[in-house]
Image (cartoon, rainbow, N blue to C red; front, side):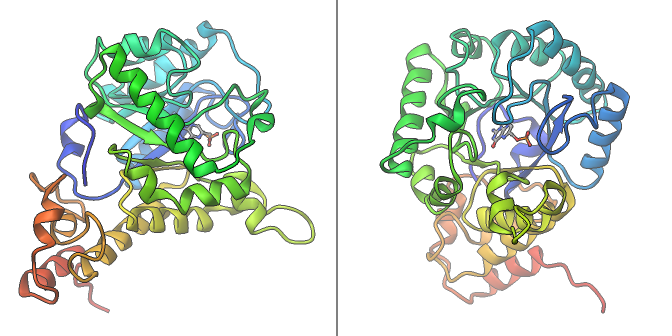
Length: 338
Ligand code: PMM
């Protein structure tokens, strides 16, 4: 598992897909809007997410649901800073979900360890220059425009080719500004100027997204395309009943070797990631890019230094079915008495 540079120490040694918990401190996000607008309630929920296995808590103060309008920067700061300060003081790894450099700057000063920008820098010309001043990972999502307009921007001839091309352009922009690309994570931006068909095509193209050379984050949790997939004659499956489908995406994405999944319900995705780690380790050597013994040896909760980028390739030379491979799978699958 290749991690971005600057990832806080406890996570940088993990050899599995990370689980990022969603914490929207907003009145109107599509899934959890209004539930965590009170800072104490938000902090308590985040701590429960960490207890359930979250590696990172992603704190956002501005809803990006389709059609949503912008809020004043002061309001965004008021929502997120108390929550970030309290979580960072408790040792939780926090990312700030914002499109604004000013909010990212204040959040990092308050203890945020990653910046998650759904616009990839397009919404605020100050974002990329700000990133040259700090040494935290930056998640650059594929984005075509603000929430009010994004459904109209969901027009592609070949969504996978165009999203890859536009993300490659973000990398060029970041490099031109002087940002170290080793710190960058890419995200296809499921549901942002994408229809359900577009989202599935992008999930089918994870290998092409990974071929851009940076770790990939997948944010599918409870999104509309899952509701549409599972809908019946009465309409899409309601938001509150999409977690099993989200867990399935987490398992499949982790089996494909993505760096992180961003989810509302942490417990199911942590289990899904554990299954995927064991699954990857059990594949015949050389058949799953980047998978193998090293991935699994650190696949549980144990941090294993050196089990990051490159060590998967070393394991590919291990003969399938070797004692080492069996041991690696055993590490990922603890013996539980039945
Ligand atoms: N989705 C949402 C918000 N932030 N960030 C990243 N990197 N990727 C996403 O897919 C993403 C995001 C919208 O979902 P929410 O309302 O559940 O937060």
